[in-house]
Amino acid sequence: MLKKIAFFNPQGNFDRNDSHLTEHPDFGGQLVYVKELAKAMSKLGLKIDIITRKIIDLDWPEFSETFDHYPNYENLRIIRVPFGGSKFLNKELLWEYLGDYVKEIIRFYNSEGEFPDFVTTHYGDGGISGAMFLKKTGINFSFTGHSLGAQKKDKFSSFNNEFLEQKYRFSIRIAAERSAIKYSTFVVTSTEQEKTVQYMHQAYKNLTLENLKKFVVISPGVNTEIFNTFEDEKVQHFEKFLKIYNKSFIILSSRIDPKKNHISVVKSYLENKKLQEIFNLIIVVRGIENVFEYSKKETEDAKILSQIIHLLKENNLLENIIFLNIDSQIELASLYKAASKFKSIFALTSLYEPFGLAIIEAMACGLPVVATKSGGPIEILNNGYYGKVVDPNDTNEISSAILEIFKDYNKYQKLGINRVISNYTWEKTAEKYLEKIHSTYKMKTEHVQLPLFFEKLI
Ligand code: F6P
Image (tube, rainbow, N blue to C red; front, side, top):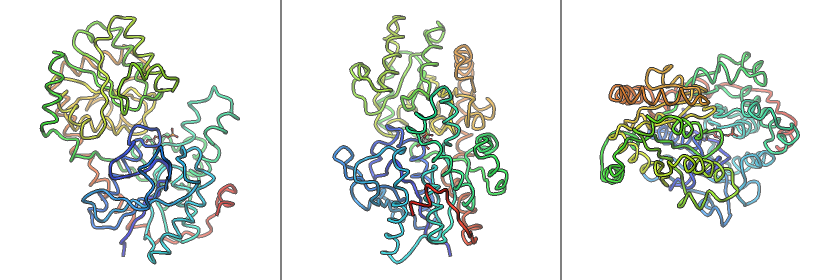
């Protein structure tokens, strides 16, 4: 009988306080996904272990204990195993240590005397760890890629290959992803597009075609305990604050990263007087107290913030932008709920967005959305029916979409809320995973042949 499921997520980290969540590239949407799916599965009566890395580093003090947990989720453990030394390492530096990750997991379960019945793996590093674990234990795994190496590599086509290999280890990552496709019992994509376009990239195409039956589209959910339309004091607090401006707001809330493309919305705003009359801009930042001071730094996010400040200043519009340092999902939801009362709109114009969890979070709180047509949002928004989809580089298209939504605000608000409630809850996601796990966990997978790089690690 299926009793226990492990989640392999070597990169980033998890803790009961959600430290660094969505503040660092390795603590992005994938971690929210793993955490919420694991929680929802545990509520369905299974024992769940999220297995990640033990880090003993003064700069990352939250991740040094072996065990952690989320309050009120007694069937769910966060287990940290040591590998790759003790300091925090970015995900690009973990590849050579994944053999040790797997060995440590085996050691851990041996010491407990009970192994999981199945493993869900996440990202290429989790996926190849699943394949190594399968080879050693015969325990099956699923693969959820979240973001694929070949897609990322294509975005850097103008860079020197040697540099890219050194920095991002693309050939190793793609080899890992290929093994994960080959040996998992099922591959989960968040959208049809991910399956029919991303996994059909030349780097995976032959394997995808050979394993097409394994692919299953399961949409992620939104945490409806947080992202909903219920009111509380925190919402009222934001409402009071926003009221002072006597305007609507265009809200941007994603990592300050070039691929999230905040700049296109800022440019649309600067080019369109009507937008300026109706809206102010809110840019959510995380962990940055004083954006103006921070923007003087040399980091990539500081440069983006500095460019935004510079553009607004040049146009005498610096007063129209608010940078908000939001430090939890709960605070974010309160901001969204309050902003929806002032006919505000959420914008996500990423150059490419694998799924678009941020837009369903906003929609669930009553914020209609304008989102990139590149990637998952086009399916979530059903080609523009539940919100507008735009070319992320077309500033005119972005402003028109925002104004059209504003004109029909109540209609888009209702459509968005209903879309989320009927399609995107984690409970539904967990049930769909479990259905697939039940039908595949006993399968026999033999002759696991790993790429040489990984074969040598175990
Ligand atoms: O968090 C979302 C996510 O897509 C993760 O899967 C991954 O950690 C990161 O963002 C993107 O990774 P990459 O840029 O290496 O594809």
